[in-house]
Image 1 (tube, rainbow, N blue to C red):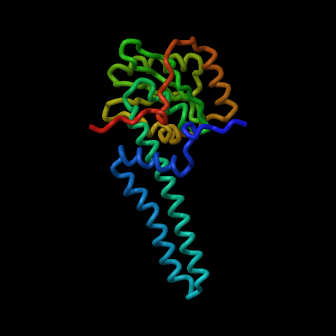
Image 2 (image 1 turned 135 degrees about the horizontal axis):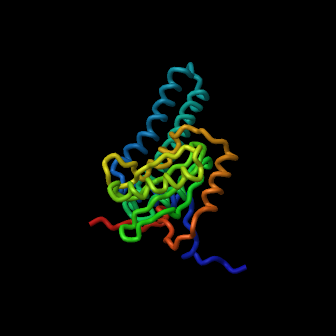
Image 3 (image 1 turned 135 degrees about the vertical axis):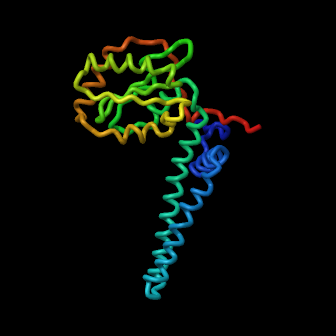
Length: 232
């Protein structure tokens, strides 16, 4: 078998994590403080517990310290992942297709969403996306409210005509002060009260997809493949 070229070999796990950390630190000034805090605080707690609860037993002290270290590493990695995702989305926020990227990569299994919009304004590139989950049908507009409110209302009426008994929620993602930030879309969907079963979610999603007309619209952006902009 031919050997793989070293230049095309994928970076190791540690190198990937370091690259993610560097990208996150570049675009998120608070990331380092949160990560360091998440790492150090559990270690401090582990040391204190080892002092007060070990009764002088060296083995027990070591266990508490190791437990604190492992907890700190785990928490630091969780914080890094969340801050990295937020930093990545900040690079595409405001661009056409950004909502589609979130629906494709960040939705939980209980939700079904498509990176393709169900309605789009060819002149302004404003769009409406749809997600279906146990909370019902959610319509998400991408763009200023002054330009998307009419399109959003039309899509809501369309869903109500086909599925009159299914709850419909609307969300606006854009530059308006009361709009939902891009990185908070999954969290906003998770807060919607469940009213449907998994079987109903599947049936509703298939029903709505069967009524769609294919639209020649470019797919959304993949936030994990966006090239970082050089700082001026």
